[in-house]
Image (cartoon, rainbow, N blue to C red):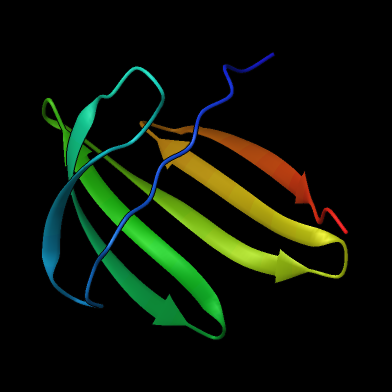
Length: 80
């Protein structure tokens, strides 16, 4: 189970931005790019590097988080 939270990020593709990654406000330096219709976020925080790949699915969105050899997938459903 995850803590529910709202976050809004403003960025320009290819430029570094400092943003929180999770609800516990872990600050990251991130760069967003777009490839084949997927939004890719590469980030670094406390010496650790990782990625988040977000892509639209028929029912909503899938986000794949990868860091230090560990991968997790979160599926979000569209609401109305």
